[in-house]
Length: 100
Image (tube, rainbow, N blue to C red):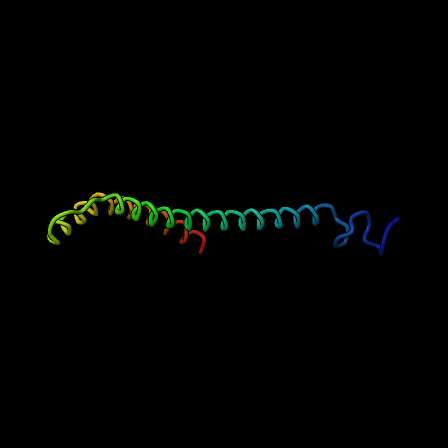
């Protein structure tokens, strides 16, 4: 039942320790690949969330009055929103940096 002198194992010389080592190395590389993909996906979702939340919040601001009054209202809203958006973008950047 052997095929081509490879022993019981069809890979390499048939040494179980070599096969186990190769399988362990393969599994570690696969796990790293999955982690990198997950980090990149997390970073992308976080960036998208920051943009969507900022846009949604700004769309809720009701600005009235003169252009100066409207500018003040939008600046006030951004004072609240900006730190939150920066925190989300920073988290996304860390995710991108780890996956690079």
